Length: 621
Image (cartoon, rainbow, N blue to C red):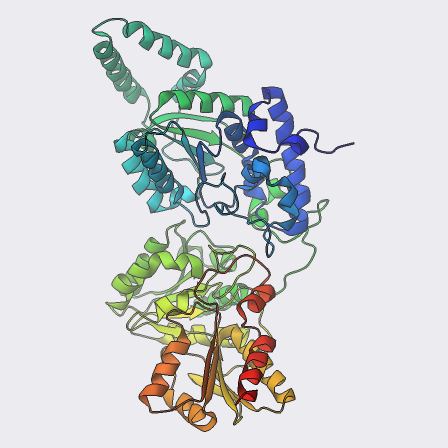
């Protein structure tokens, strides 16, 4: 018997559009079963997708993608959309190298209207699509789906403010699974909200307007009645922030009642103006372990369906070590504070939040604010440590320059998930932080390679009295190198006379692996490890390169602005002539999803490939 009798026959939104309300309800149940089964094998973002099933199914039923444009904020909640737009058979490849992306990707399907990966951007993108539609004279709808988490980001409000005053037809679906914005409170408010959501009320409004429009004075009368209704309503209810920005607001409604969702979407289509539909949902809906602990099922590795337990224990990682060390140091120094942007658990700061709640600040998805506030903490005599993923820290580049570096404020930036992170793909690889951090005056950039070095790097950064410090560390565990050389800005780990291998962070493991491979071929590599990317002693590099006359730099960042360029320039300025010089990095393009080891091989930055390339070049003389 087919476990998915309806879902197995859905090949496009056209098929979803033909379903009855009862069939839609059955389809939603099948989708939940499919998601739990599939994601338990591949890993991925489960809780957010279980919570949005009815909304996503109703959207595909009411609208006609790809003619109608559907934009998902962050994008990790797009799994149902992908299932219903012809990609069900590819779900076993989700987030794998060469497989289905866990985020919207227009090059993957015409049904993905816009790239998704970072939060709070959907309303801006949707408004741009809506304005393009109007300018091109097209007859279509634009819908964006945004969650309460993304609503903590300032960019969402910039876009809502613009969209509301523009009057451009646009439907914003607010998926609220935990936070309420300007709630209408009290018994009267609840009663009136229920009335406003009844079909009879909306139908009466429509028929009343149609009646008035039969008369020459009809539009004026409609305007007068509407203004009177707004005055009466504002006297009884607090207007929502959406209404203050110029949107028609409908809600809150049950986001798990697919009939209600479908009805409100249909009514919103008719309005042809900016509309916010507010739906209350439960994150992780329909799967017990996920409902009980949605934060643990936000992004999951493969797990056991019966218990919800991961199939493999992850063990210690750099984020956890950072959080543990910071908590311990804060117990001894009351000036130490921790700041993060909606990543308390992911950044390893849950322990700190429990131990020092008065000094822990989660500012929501607002990286720019997090950095500038950290500057304010530093200016006020505190020692802030702001932990943000490398890919999201890109948003705070201006604040690091303007609000930290110019004032030489001693704030610490924990650059979590620096380098290639794997399965989340292009939007999440931390391959740009080295180039942009190295451009900032007075910013010291430290790159520990082991857990022991991370602790010492944090101690060093907190002791600095002038200027910001960035500590970049990888996602996951330490590698074969577990030592501690952080008493110096650089260290020569191995002596050799045939080539100088330079690296930093966890990539030092690839440099050491390359040296091992070269040794098997009779070549002696000198391995130079950089601990400070801004304060390394050029003389160590000059002495080594002058001896070997060959240089290779291995790093997991993009080519433009990489550290290798600085090393080459330093050697040229010192008059060192090289007979061989090679950069091993992530290249000039974005890096797709895949296991980190696969991506190292794709980019040619794993030790074996680097050694083969070097050996071939040296063998040719």
